Image 1: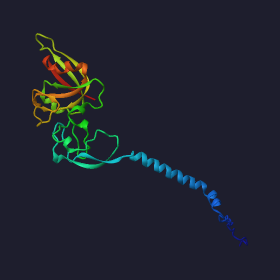
Image 2 (image 1 turned 60 degrees about the vertical axis):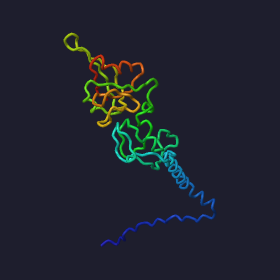
Image 3 (image 1 turned 90 degrees about the vertical axis):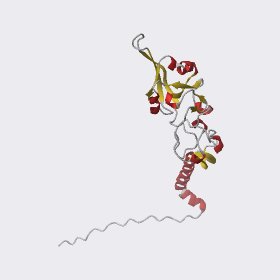
Image 4 (image 1 turned 45 degrees about the vertical axis):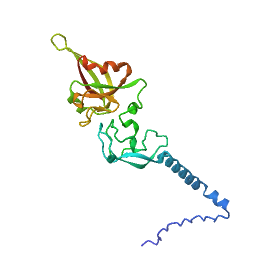
Length: 232
């Protein structure tokens, strides 16, 4: 039997921290953790300001239900709500009377804050390049209107000739023009600020195009078959 005694784990004495005798000594001892804490607080405050964007509560008109493009706005579909918005957002509408009876240029889901550029009217071209005009175009196949929605880009193609006396020829007279307005099934012949001679069944849409091309686009149907091709 061995007489060797088991080894004992050496005891490492814990350092004794002398109590701080003054506030200045206490501050010097914990200055790094305090600096880190204040930095994190300042960063959190800055992120909070950026996240809110300095928004302010404003009384504005909001859609209560989904409203399809081309539909007129009724009192049952809207109400005034308090919404956080940027103070310089001047497109919002605060008075219900300003939208009642107006026709929507695009579909809006419930909860949408209504803005002037969403309505068929002078603000329909808001944000467009200088020299852009709204051009009504009559498509030769009215059924294709059901496939087109405001905001989509379309090429306008003019096809001439009958294949007998004249050779059939197609050319694109406008490329990637945005659709501003299409008629809904119950919108009748009323196009808001646009005056149309026909009904929605006659295939009228409204696109944004350069003023220099407006005459050619508006009168294209008198020269041949006019069609719209959806593009990305």
